[in-house]
Each structure stands twice: as C-alpha cells, then as structure tokens.
Length: 460
Image 1 (cartoon, rainbow, N blue to C red):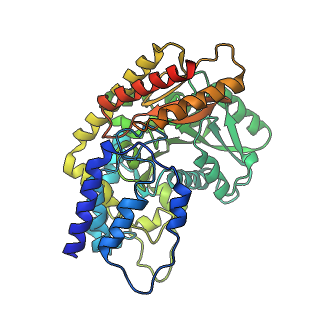
Image 2 (cartoon, helix red, strand yellow; image 1 turned 180 degrees about the vertical axis):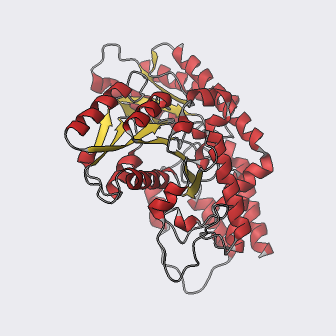
C-alpha cells in the first residue's frame, strides 16, 4: 500500500506542478485515443507502474485542462489537493455516513460543514441541508421538496417559474419530478439578463385565474451564461405575498456571499426557502461536490423520508442527522470530508481572499475588453462571468456569429487559455469565467493578449 501511494503520489505531484505549463485544452485526435484504449479487462492484473503510465501519459493529457490557470470556460472547477486527500481518507476508511449511528463523528463533521453553509447564505436556527453530487441533484431535491410543501400529493396542476437564463438542470428536474413542459413557465429577462419580476407577477396571476396552482419560483444566484443575479429581494417579497416557494440556484455564485461585494450582489438570498450551492465551483473543490440548503430543515425530511424494517429507527434528536431521511440517497459516499478538510486546513479567510481576487480579475478583464476597438461588452459582470463579442458593424447576424465563433477558435487555438461560447437572445457570444484558485493576473493578461491578437488576425 505504501508503494502504491508513493508511486501514485509522485505522478500526481508532477501532474499538478505542470498544470500552468500544460495546454489549456488538447482534444485533437481524441477519437483515435479513445479507440486505442478500448480493451476488455484481463483475467490477470497488471503492474501499477504500467497502469499509472497509461493514465498520466495517455488518458489524462488528452482533455480540457479544467484545473489549470488558463481554464476560463464554462464554470471552472479548481480541484483543491486537500479535498483529494480527504477523498482518499474517506474511501480508505470506508465508513457509511448515510445514517448517524454507523459513523456519528464523521456525520457530525458533515453537519458542521452544512451549518456553516447555512450561516454563510444568511440562514438561522432550524435550517439544514445535504451534500449532493452537484447542482443538478440539488435542484432536483429542491423541486421535489417544494412540490411536497406547496402542492401535496396531487400536484399535476402545479406550475413553476424560471427565467430564460435558468440552468437546464431545472427543466430536467421538473421532468423527473413529474411535470410536463406545460407546467414550466419561462419568464423573460431584462437588459441585464435578470428575471423580470413584473412579468413573473403577471404570469402567476394569469395561471391562478385559469385554475392552475403556482407553487415555485427558481431564481438565479449567478447564471451560467452571464453570471446574472436576479433581484432576490423583490422575488422574496412576491413569493411571500403569493405563497410560493422561492428556490435560488446559486450553484455558481452562492459562495461569493463570503465577500462583501458578493453579499451585496446576492442581497435577499437568505429569504429563499432553498438554495443550491456548488463547492466544486465557488470553493474550488474537485467535481462531484454540491449542496442544497433549506431555511426549514424539516421540509427535507417531509419530502424524502421513507422507513424500512431493516434500517435503524430514524433519529428523533434534531442534533443527530440521518442523511438518508432528508435526501434521495441511502447508499452514498462520505462527501463531508472532502469539504471539511480544505476549510479546516486553509481557513475560511483563504477562500474569501481568493473569491475577492476573482471579482477583481473579472472587472479588470471587462475594462480591458470595453476599451478594445471593435469589441462589445454584452453585459457588465455581476460576479466573475464576462460575456463579450465583436460588434456587428453592419454584418448579417449569421455572418457576425460566424466571425465570433472564429474568434473563439482563434483564441483557444493558442492554448494558453480556454474560453467557451453561448447564445444570448439568439446571438453567439464569447464568455470568460474567472473561478480557479490558480488563475491570477498574469494568466488574465495572457488571455487579453491572445484575444487582441486573434481579433487582429480576423480583421486583417
């Protein structure tokens, strides 16, 4: 075991040390690589040296460099090493944490993390939550909980509302929870890509008049497209007045509440009934770490608890949590250690500082793009997503979109940074998202340099 740890550790450290020098993405001839790796598992084992070589010399390099400093696409996941160490410990000791009794100490550490998250978003006593595999499952559990609390068993006349900027996992969650497309209202967003509260109020009233039952509003606490934060205060007022469950999808943006600027942007989030958070985004942890927190913890139990004769009696003490009673999972990994160890080891202040730095870098990049000839800043950054595009200059929309797609390809071809694109109101837009603890000013300067060179190349 010590030998395996040593050999794997050497490979991992070398890999992490080389991240800044690796290309931001390399998927050329990816299909050929995948074909070359097709093989049945052999009856006899192979030496670990051979297997580690296959992983680190062939499988790992041909990929997006998602933990690298130049990864500015989609929503980066930093992959803190302390979290990987915690995952090794959790898997090696292999304790079961779906119920309190089999591992009360480990469950308590997970509860500590969740209580800290609750306080971070503005929740008080009586709140609680669960760790999930990511924001998609958190949104699903939130929707199921809202359905149970607001509609009961007969829910087919229920209606839920979200903006045209909402994450696609909300639509998927609605399907999985039994709602057809006709139950989901897409509300238009304003010029800042925030849900229009006036339009929402009109649709709620129209649905009530038609005999339907509005029950849920999903707000953005940092959208994927532009980082937009909806007017959470106004939405909380409307939902309180109309008796609607307010869920905030803050998978990307929620942990910016650790900073002063983030708290201002997310003002009103603590009034929501439930909030999705993703530690693998705002806390820079490895992929597979999400969370759902709720203002009233007992709502999770009412939505998820089912007893079986072969299980221990559910905990009656509110201090002791059976996660199987408040989530969809019975079998589950010990997710708590992967969040607890980095926070306990580095301290919350280190994360607050890093998030503040990302806010600074996004605003710096926006200013640089704003003053770049021929460039259009599509939306001011509300958090750390910066959407931009080459201005039309009288081009046909299709030609303009093609030119911006070419710009994205030209930037990414340089392999120092990796950007992604999206469609905003039918137009193709480039976007950069600053959210890796490894991304600092030097790499952002490289990004802007590559953008300038790519623009000059296209317009030459």
